[in-house]
Length: 540
Figure 1: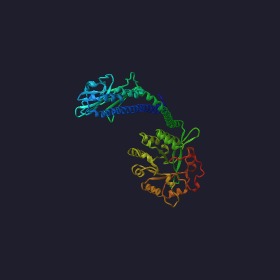
Figure 2: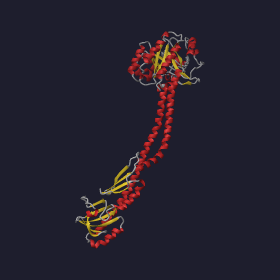
Figure 3: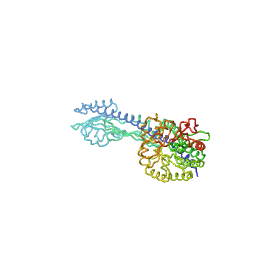
Figure 4: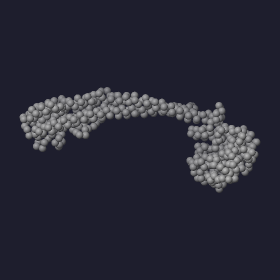
């Protein structure tokens, strides 16, 4: 079976690979989007140019018909020469002429009475109900193999004028625009026959589909379809690829490095804590607690410390925070209980000697919390200690009903409960009212606010008075001066803890200290100003 930490590392490599693939996948998507946008923009530009040219041709046709109105009341024989000259000298036109009903009465190309309008355009005229209309046709009677566009103006008296533009002009222009991109172009005038250029792609790229763009003129009934082949999409994608992918590759490498670094730290802390437990790198330091009434050491607070084999000390706030983040706080707390139980085998203390143990919120909410504490209490029962669980206000935020039930169950077994660092969290008064508590530990920040013995610290005094009214024992943390000690003593604070009395120390030092100073009253001559500090940190 693969060890758990190996599974984590395999999972970590999978995360690193996914982190590297994510920018690449995003980059590929961007290249496709950019290629499509590029091709679409090219189609829009080409369509704009073609429609503009078609509109210019239409303008020329309608201008020609307007100029023919001067021959309205003249016979075809009288204007035959003028029609031939106008049709020849003006660009685009295949023929121009007059209508008599549905008959072509005269033509610049075929003279007088060449036939009907239907015969000339080789299809029935459209029924539009309009006096002005245009139509693209596949061919005319004179040039059946080449498309053309006819423009007709019918007058109220049944006569009219017409002009035909040769489609070759438009075809040449369309080929010039679309050939370089391989476009398939189709233009229609008023839903007539298409004027088309370009061939259908014989072997389309299987990865890309052709892209069609349809548009129309805002001035005339002209529609245009521009189809870009898959090869054009492929070409645009390759160009986008060489622009986007180098940048994407850099982001991919950076994200993989960041992910690997994050995983390394995450896996390192989890593995390091697990290995440190196995290697017994953790130890417990104990900070004595002084009882102002009995004037002796009345207990200790257990503080977990981590000393690596190279004598490097890991700060408690760092490894405890890491243990909480990595889900290792419960195993670490269980290890702390084991270490305390081992240390207590050497103790010689009176019954009801206070033993304060910090409990994390995650452990308090764990299903086996009560059984863990009761099992520990059973191991140290021979010394009859007064076990006190020190909880932060954060520990009581979630699952309040379940937490209260667990604490009541433990208190029924003689275990005490203290709220630690009181006043630094949220809704403290609510906790005092709703949870079974025995002790209240005042945060050192309030103790530091004491400036003179006969002065007042309103918040601190209010906390002390509230504790007395709730029948809670009070412990002042972080006492460092005799003035602070005397101030708290004057206000009925029973327990004090801080450097003025004693620094945290390891188990051997504690046993020696208890023999020498454990029963000594605390006064000015007792101040531990010259005492050597075993640990540079104090964890409350």
